[in-house]
Amino acid sequence: MTPGKYDAPINRFKHPFVQLVKNNHLMANQLEIRNLNVTIGDKPILKDFSLSIPKGEVHALMGPNGTGKSTLAKVIAGHEDYTVQSGEVLVDGVNIIGMEPDEIARSGVFLAFQYPLEIPGVSIANFIRAALQSRMAEGETFNAPAYYRSLYEKMDLLQIDRKFTARSVNEGFSGGEKKRCEILQMAMLDPKYCIMDETDSGLDIDALKIVANGVNVMRSPDRAFLVITHYQRLLDYIVPDKVHVMWDGRIVQSGNKELALELESKGYNWVKEELATS
Ligand code: ADP
Ligand code: MG
Image 1 (cartoon, helix red, strand yellow):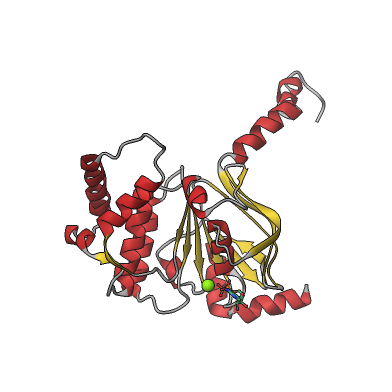
Image 2: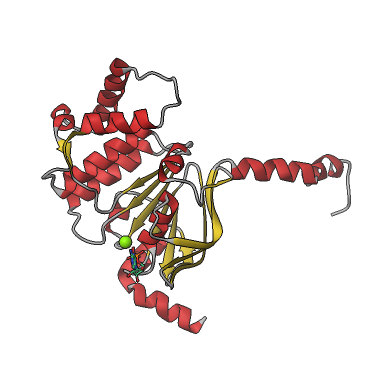
């Protein structure tokens, strides 16, 4: 194409300053994991792991057991058992590696646990209230009526019975009830980045639907999700924007939702064989 009079203004968008602003804008709106190397003891678990999830998207992370999925989730949440050898986890451009778990939570990250703890004697309503209070700035006062309004609003949205909040956190809960409790906490904390580590087995269809409904209700252009799952089943209810396959501490394949179906029919050995021939 010969240069015309419109070239100059178009090229202006390639100006380094414009690129910088664009990049900053991107960084300010995503969870970015960069070349993360993590060990437990001497054992490398995450090996140069990289992944970016822009706000507004739902990414699924799949992979066989023992590949490091839960490790990734816990490292992002600031779990102390893991040693980050190198790499970064950027939340809106800010590296959270080395921060305390509560600081990470304040930065907008929420981790739904694979195996939530029971807290006998502490009601769900009080537990969520304490979580919200703990991240309030000094001098800020808690508005109880507003809290209950917001709690009931979220419960209606998630179709949770009002009686539920008087029960002790996870005590004697079924798998589905535990998930309901997690989703309600997530909705109340209103995080920007939600990481959901789903149990590889044990979740029945009802529990899967509760998780999926929660994610679908909370999907928004201002929020991103990383849904970790071993089986494709959950993705029947949550349609992800992207699917990543993890193997031996890193992502070895990425694609759209069809990749999850392909995995379901061909199994994880298919990924292994592909890797061996590539
Ligand atoms: P996934 O969630 O994909 O099944 P994990 O992240 O749980 O994988 O585990 C990855 C590897 O790290 C496994 O080999 C597991 O045995 C090991 N591992 C995980 N947590 C610990 C721990 N706290 N101590 C020792 N080894 C661990
Ligand atoms: Mg796991």
